[in-house]
Image (cartoon, rainbow, N blue to C red; front, side, top):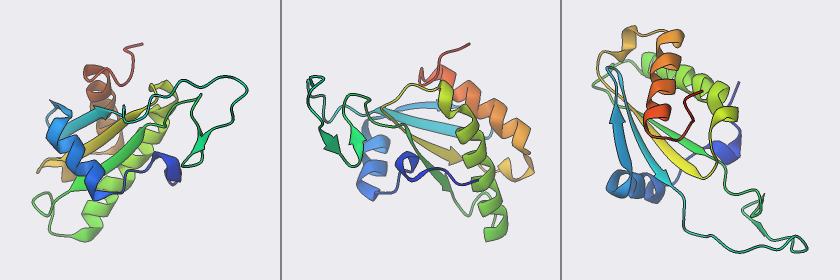
Length: 137
């Protein structure tokens, strides 16, 4: 299952902004960097139908995810891609519980190649709660 396009973080400038001024939280195998998107906070009345990048401004921006897995984690692309797929599925399952408007980058630490989906899900949930992207319930 792929992450829907609105929830993908793809531009280099977005990654750089998150690394520069975002908050950072860590667990044993993952590091989370998060930044609240505040570039546009317009006052929208109910009769206006403003649409930016395909989203209604009354609903806010979607939470976006970027994943960074370096070759220090594994030299094999197959392993790095498996880790990315597991993290995307874990993020997708937690997406309904998250508040909107966040940009999140997950950096995978060396040693994470041995982790399974359940461990990634647990660590990702813990990181999102620590960063207040998701409430603790």
